[in-house]
Length: 115
Image (cartoon, rainbow, N blue to C red; front, side):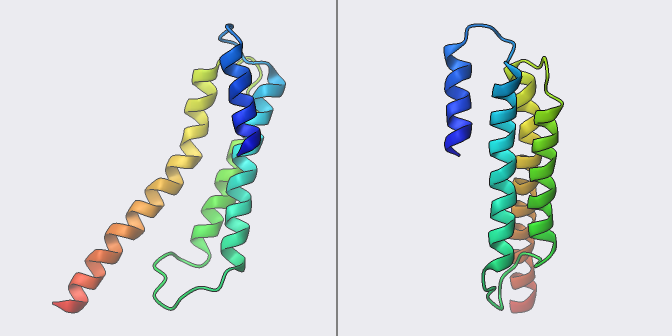
């Protein structure tokens, strides 16, 4: 996360809308590596019996999102910051969408079981 912050400081300091390729790689690589590490940690933690997330799907989405973010970084030559940030939001929003799906379906399942 610190590397992503350092990349963003570089973007803020630069008045040009085009990103240097190394800054794009830094930002995308940082976001990708964070998603991959979180997925790895999720596979290593002890799961509670009532854990609502799927034991393979949840980490797999994080691994795939991390790899997608890194790929976006490699393909980002000539992107401006808005395009890069918009594309990097996609793998992050997939994680958010899965979390919302699990959250709301979990409550529906508990309501059905109680009723």
